[in-house]
Length: 137
Ligand code: GTP
Ligand code: MG
Image 1: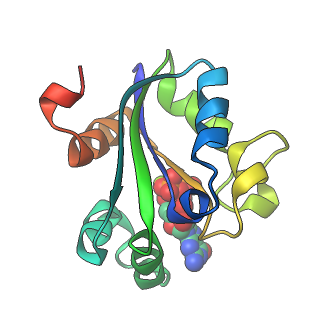
Image 2: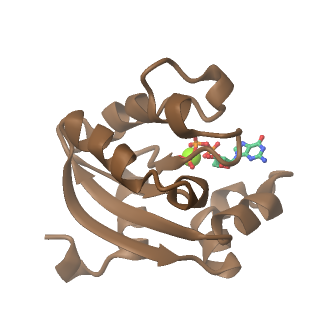
Image 3: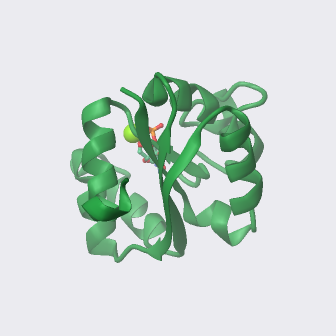
């Protein structure tokens, strides 16, 4: 697939890192197809991360993701999902490689600066969660 979906998470938005993170994304060869700054309610955050609803950190995750503004983007590049997961690095910044977005900007395993879809199927579902068809040209 050639598209993925990302969100710059509330911690990174609050620290004025939208520009620095987007610069790294574009420098790695991704084209921004769609972009939106918004705020999730706790309920919508819960829908977005419904796959994690049985996990012990689910309520904290919903509170964190709805605690500030986020920037949602659809990105285009060959092999987008895998290449983007590589660019963002491990979920836990303590385990993220040098040069990754999470190594540079994440504060903790929860407040980890950025989301990246984990499959082509989820990239499509997540992009459609934030953007209407006419916004995804
Ligand atoms: P996303 O790109 O945001 O989906 O992250 P990921 O795919 O690297 O991790 P995963 O889907 O497993 O977890 C989703 C999000 O839940 C993470 O990005 C963190 O924000 C949060 N999270 C994951 N594991 C933990 C944990 O052990 N504790 C806490 N507090 N939060 C976690
Ligand atoms: Mg995930």
